[in-house]
Length: 127
Image: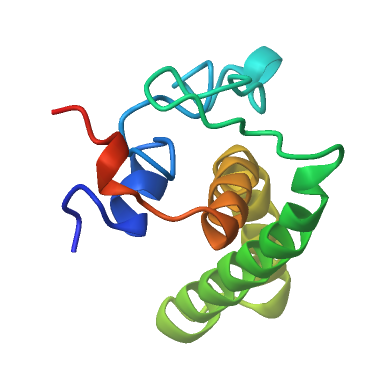
């Protein structure tokens, strides 16, 4: 499931979708806000151009929205149903969870978006 060549491996390890080797983002640390969404122009291994066309990652905002909704629902279920928080406490918990998960969801959304269009290709695999 998490082995090289799968989309999940590439997404979770911030790797190129075509070769699963080159880094996608310049900065590996998600808490480095200065370079949070800065990505390499091309893959260092297979030379895939990440920004395929102007505004390519515009569609990633829809994926980010879906991730944010999922985080909000999961937080509500955990706080309200499992821990028996009040509605107001659950609401504050959702806001905090969304703020803390924003860097991760922004980066994941871009990775998921490019994986919709680019698949793993073994001929670029340089073991």
